[in-house]
Amino acid sequence: MKSVTVPGIRAMCFCYCLVAVSVTATAQPTVRWLAHDMQRPRPPVIAPAKQVLPVLPPSDAIVLFDGTGLSKWRDAEGGPAKWKSQDGYMESVPNSGYIYTADKFGDVQLHVEWAAPLPAKGRSQGRGNSGVFLMGLYEVQVLDSYENDTYPDGQAAAIYGQYPPLVNACLPPGQWQSYDIVFHRPRFHEDGTLAKPARLTVHHNGILVQDGRELWGPTAWLQSLPYKSHPDKLHLSLQDHGNPVRYRNLWLRELQESTEEGPPAEPRRKTVELAADQLQRFVGAYQGPLGEFGTIELKGDQLQLHAKMGQVIDLLPMSATEFAMRWTAGKLVFEVKESGQVAGFTMHLGGEEYPIRRVPAAQSAE
Ligand code: MG
Image (cartoon, rainbow, N blue to C red; front, top):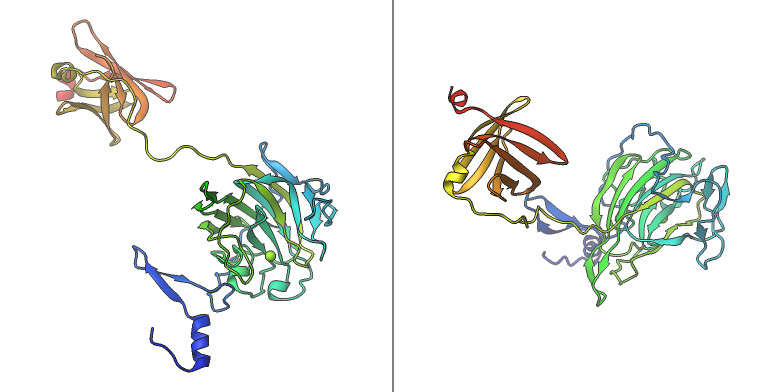
């Protein structure tokens, strides 16, 4: 970029210019913004459909607040939380401080219901501000964003200072609204360096507003902070930002780490070798109780089931009459008559058995 010499203009360009940093496969340029930039496009405002609230916890949920007191919450020093709890909700008491769950959590599915103060007071970041801090570090912003403009990375359901929501699905102040959050904590190597960033998915009033966003570090005001290695579980917190925001019906489900990944592994089943004539006898048309099922064909030395619905399944011989399906936990057990003719097979799949009959050669040739 050519240097601009008028100091004022240069400063403005520095503050407000978008920086095209890369081009995706679909040729859409990606952009980066300074934090809290008022030039950033506003997410479209949409009206969510009426929701049925509260959404009650399922049987495996850990209930953080059921409307009957703050026993699961602490202040920053570990003492009793100083927010109000009454009439089934809790309310941030201005200047009482953030509150923290007594327990610590890592990966979670979290349900939150909140309501901004009515009548609305203040503007921009001063109206109905609070926040849900996963692990006390990663904030999903709570703000009264109903007809209240602010910087987009700080509006309701923004990942604060990082990502605006995809749309503004905020309800008017005083109305109960919901966040449904899926959070995956960052992973760190043993030497403390980042292995995998934190990831957030958020639904606001049932609308997807954060779609598996990867965070570049803890959320922050006026700063862009790098990750610092931290424990796998930390206290979840709610922000006191000086506004009496209400919460109710908070629950979460701890998510277990998945050890599964990718397509099926090459089968570990023990197979046998069958001569070509032993394979050839299975070739032909087959039918199930509902009619045509498919054909068995021999391609080179590979026996294949060509199902009527289009699937082509390699059959691996485990004995003279039993064949495994290459990528599936199932098998075909053939019935062979004394004459050596194949009468049909039983398909074993998903705990069920399906009888399949061979179509007599004369009939199949018709
Ligand atoms: Mg906040």
